[in-house]
Length: 191
Image (tube, one colour):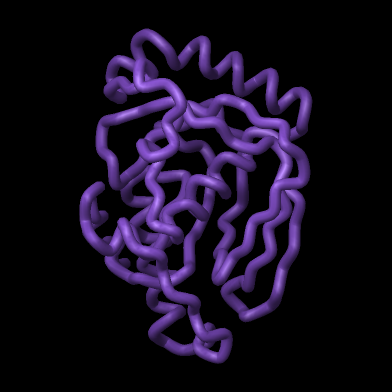
């Protein structure tokens, strides 16, 4: 198990657009090692996802997984998904408010508008091309990780500066109401 250091907001690798992973390199020990390190680091930090540039790898790759995560008890489950060279297309203009945090912005939360219906295309860990439509609350996790690959962190997208708060304040004063908001989204969209 290799848990890597998570880079913090302001680091130049986080601020730059990540490079494409050459498709022929996906099966190499180097790229497969990156995937393993991402999974190990995400799980160690109780993250819902992590992008390669967050651990110093400037390539277009991220992983997502939501199970029984103590940081996000309200998030719908998402199986471990490896995403290489993704594209995201908005299927509608409809958005919802997502209260987000980030392993690279420790102890902070803020409100971000996210599209409720997206189509994602990417290569998986085996180099197979995948295309899926993601709807509802789960769409925010994909958009959050995708933003990382373009050098965008959630504070760059916060729509209301008054929504910035610490993790502790969120848990004490906002999480219960936010969990109800998420429950309504999941009920409507199934994810």
